[in-house]
Image (cartoon, one colour):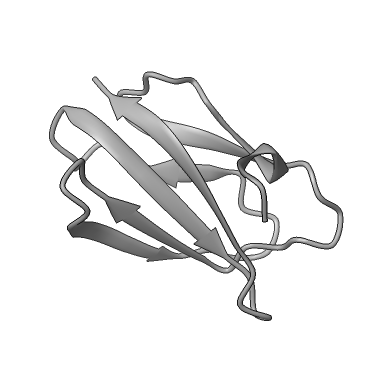
Length: 82
């Protein structure tokens, strides 16, 4: 899935990322957070209808969040944690 399939805001973020899905048939169920070195630093299950992801426990830095749905499609987006 193209990164335009999702929007994350505010970016940069302090405590929570708001998630907006721009593809009607893409319903993410899992979020994996990677640091700038590509190491997995957090993984979260996403309930249907969830629109916020907590990031308060991540150190300041640049991250990539990978969102996947039950069919295995994936969309990635970069964000900054303040």
